[in-house]
Length: 128
Image 1 (cartoon, rainbow, N blue to C red):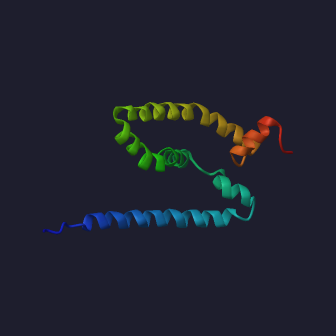
Image 2 (cartoon, helix red, strand yellow; image 1 turned 30 degrees about the horizontal axis):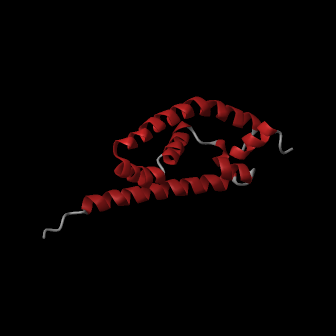
C-alpha cells in the first residue's frame, strides 16, 4: 500500500496551533494589564472590549457546538429528511439573535450587567 503525503495537513495544523497560541498570549497580556481594576468585570466581559468580530465568533461557536457536530448528524441519520428541521431552527435562532442582541448589549452597558442572571435579577427586582 502506498502511504499518502500528509505534510500539508501537518503544516496547516502547525499554523492553526501557532495562531491559537498567539491569540492566547495576546489575551493573557491584555488581561494582565486590565486586571488591576474591576477583576470580575474583566473576567466575565473581557473588559467590555469585544468588538463585532469577537461577539460574532463567540456566537458562532455557541451555535455550532457539540450538538451540531455530534447530535444533528445522528438525528439526520436516524430520522432522514426530518432532520431538515434543524435548518429552519437555525435560521429562526440567528434572526432572533440579530434582532435582540444589539438592544440587549446597549442595556447591559448602561446597567453594567456581568451575565445573564443580572438581566433576570434586574427584571424581577432581586438584588440591591
